[in-house]
Amino acid sequence: MSSVTVNALESKSFDEPDEKRRPPRTEVDVVTISDTTLGRFTFEPGWRWSETVKTVVHTDSCQVNHLGVCTSGTLVVQMEDGSQITVNPGAAYAIPAGHDAWVEGDEPFVAYEIMSAATYAKPA
Image (spheres, helix red, strand yellow):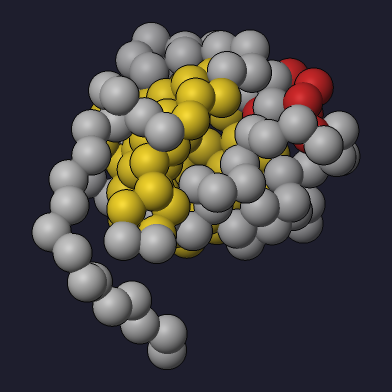
């Protein structure tokens, strides 16, 4: 297991991120703190990876690994083999590469991620 060493006292706001990525119906706000990149992902109701982020990264399915926690909304994730999970508020999640995903319901999905923030939704 790898570890991160924190050498300085730092705080950054996702409301003033180091980087913003804005594919359709998608907001990815990225901060780097103590050599670690974190992201706040906000997906609007009706968002679907294969209709939004795919237009930027040009892969058939999401090829990013995700590790995060959901703070609001509901996301359904379906793997290429057909297996799926539903991520609800308060849930931590791990999602391997090779999936599609979509927001269910009328509330935006909001999550904070540490594993994929450096690369997610970056143009190919």
